[in-house]
Image (cartoon, rainbow, N blue to C red; front, side):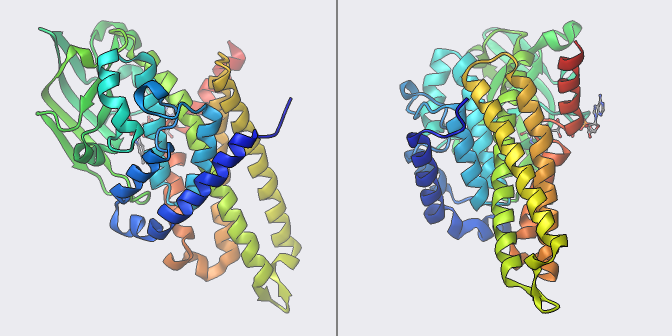
Length: 385
Ligand SMILES: Cc1cc2nc3c(=O)[nH]c(=O)nc-3n(C[C@H](O)[C@H](O)[C@H](O)COP(=O)(O)OP(=O)(O)OC[C@H]3O[C@@H](n4cnc5c(N)ncnc54)[C@H](O)[C@@H]3O)c2cc1C
């Protein structure tokens, strides 16, 4: 068992951190205030191979590993702690991976190079107004006829629809192609956001302002049959594969955020005084710091194991990525909360940046990439089967 990163991975971390310091850090406040990540950032990130790192050389990507992708995700979240850039990255990474793994050659050749170079967004449209956890019971239909898929229905809480419409991207969309077969009647189809009949309504979120969340209505939307990912009626399995891998990126972002928040907190309690002592000299606060440090280390190690298992194609990796998704958002929330309390009133101001993290991290607690109870369901089912 080797717990060290390779020299290349350490260099990747350093180079990524340096790139983000220069190209993302100056914009973090405006990303949250204005609700937009500068387009230029994605182009530059694409040039540096860090916007969709799993895309391989054949399609213009760097062909990095899941472990490498985790390193990048951690670094992004340390800079844009609102989680907006992390979410854009996680979607482009995980769902480009699914397109690359199961998509048809023509579609991959058409989409992947632009995703790799930061010019096109790709996301997932699974959740519907009636719920997100029970994927098997989606009701959006896809009728396959005359070389086309005709889509009718509605998706809800979908990340990146506005961005996709702007930059020629779209979503891997789950549709029912056989109503009688439950989860075995679901097909995954790539739907460009600018297709006729696609209506996007932006929702107002409490956080991660730099990436949109929307409802999407489909009114007789037609896409060519070539846009079907893999086999008809196998879409449920492809989506689970995608979610399992996306969960590693979610956990990595949460862990990166936790590291950054704790760093800032420790700096603060070493400087701020009360009752003639530094805050860090009070055991009540120092012990909290010790607990958080230990928890963040545990969460990071668990997630490195998940990424390692994904890289090894270990069939049990989904159990570990679910454990990571269960653990890291809760630890990140706890870290943000405790650090905010160390900061006192300053922590509640927009200037401190902590409230930005608190608003962002909630999205991972409530649901994005799977609710926490669903993670417990996956883990317990694997234990008890
Ligand atoms: C900011 C944000 C962005 C998102 N982006 C996307 C996206 O890009 N694409 C996409 O498809 N979806 C997206 N989602 C939706 C996300 O996938 C869902 O929130 C998630 O799957 C949960 O679905 P739900 O919100 O409908 O909650 P529900 O499924 O209605 O569940 C509500 C609550 O009940 C609990 N629950 C449900 N079933 C059980 C059970 N059997 N046992 C115990 N508890 C249970 C859940 O844990 C949850 O706490 C996003 C969500 C958020 C918050």
